Image 1 (cartoon, each protein chain N blue to C red):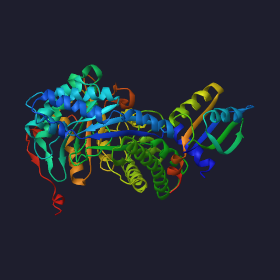
Image 2 (spheres, helix red, strand yellow; image 1 turned 30 degrees about the vertical axis):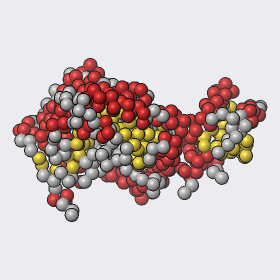
Image 3 (spheres, chains in turn orange, green; image 1 turned 90 degrees about the vertical axis):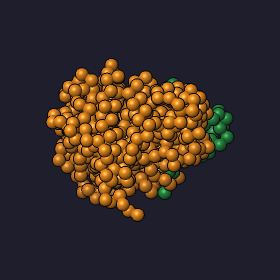
Image 4 (cartoon, one colour; image 1 turned 90 degrees about the horizontal axis):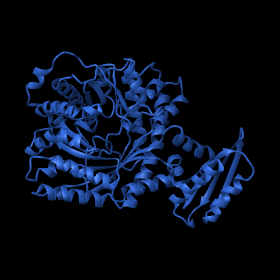
Amino acid sequence: MINRSEILQTIAMIDQQHLDVRTVTMGISLLDCCDPDPEKACGKIYDKITRSAKDLVKTGEDIEAEFGIPIVNKRISVTPMALVAGASETEDYVPFAKALDRARAETGVDFIGGFSALVQKGMTRADQLLIRSIPRALSETELVCSSVNIGSTKAGINMDAVALMGQTIKETARLTADRGGFGCAKLVVFCNAVEDNPFMAGAFHGVSEPDRVINVGVSGPGVVHHALQAVRGASFDVVAEAIKRTAFQVTRMGQLVAGEASRRLNVPFGIVDLSLAPTPAIGDSVARILEEMGLEVCGTHGTTAALALLNDAVKKGGVMASSSVGGLSGAFIPVSEDEGMIAAASSGALCIDKLEAMTCVCSVGLDMIAVPGSTSSETISAIIADEAAIGMINQKTTAVRIIPAPGMKVGETVEFGGLLGSAPVMAVHPFSSAEFIKRGGRIPAPIHSLKN
Amino acid sequence: MRAIVTVIGQDRVGIIADVSRILAERGVNVLDISQTVLQQYFTMIMLVDASRCTVPFAELTSLLKSEGDMLGLDIRAQREDLFHAMHRI
């Protein structure tokens, strides 16, 4: 039988250390919803999503109650919308986003993702129409998330798309200026995007996935932090072991929930994403884990090494605990969503350049970073290009979710609320990258992409 | 289906009786009990068999929570599989 201390330890993890399942995400293919008539296509999309996910929220709540584990979000990801909307005879893709939002409201899920395009090598007409409709789509819907993949190790970086995304982000911020540029918090620009990511804003349901699938994202920075407090002063070998053990336990819990959800909904299990996803709550921070390793404040020298160790140990611990690991699986470093990152950025210890270095060794990229509203679209594009280059060369996913907060300056703070938290506006370099971005074309794939 | 019921609260007379009554009324059989009092805090762990529970298990957990709130106790029931998943290979 399970002993007393194990039971009490589990309860302490849930009650005091914020252990939770961050999301149960149902991926739904919309490839069978294509129709030349955009209205009919939107009708099919709404019907398929509401039919497929009608029991998702209820099932999540049942599992939550029976196991006593909080499942913070229930979400839906769909086929990149450019692939579906491209079949319709229309130039306005905003109605497709609205159809997604209606389906989200009907099913009761927290977010729906997949207003997306994959343009790493080039853009179709549909891709261009979708990207141009992103600002309105994000300002006229509530909880629809959008992502665009502009680069990959195999294809290189599509610099035309990079330039376009800089403008798209600026326009999205302008249209949602009354809410601090909130629309940009729902928009991710990827390099090497994955097809089975359960986390928002970047989730979409890849074309190689089955008709429906259940992916689960776990969380647990607080649990890792607690485990490290018990080995204070010990060597890094001990630190790595403590993280691995904890990640194993957290992932086993995620696997259990994923299996239950898959069985009850009669939808195949896809993957467990091992990511350590922070929240703005005290005690649920990735930055505080890094500081626990001996850094005075996250962002100082040593931060990248600490994050590298954390990211790797999380994967090693988690990988044996799940039958299938996927998604992004590592440590997230979203600035506005992490209490310790917010504090570090506000104090000036954490700057964009250091964050960029950290993204070389963590699971994603520059995430939930607010910059001054006056930042030019070319500078934003150049930030995207830098981040994509890191992903392309290192064969990993990188992403940029950046908010040029309208009318705001360095030192001010944008409030988003909820899981999205609050973002201190961070400085960008004042020197121009405009001529660089104006060139367009494609940065070729690196030599090590030629593996065949 | 087996579950772990944990009860934490200020010690007083009749906690075991109260919790057992709630469980018995719903057809839940207690298989094992361990309890201790630490600095006036009562901690009880019960292993129960809920396969003949007369209400859905999710309902039982919320019922225990609300009854616990009335009795000034933190009562939770969780399926035993969770603890096996996290603590046994």
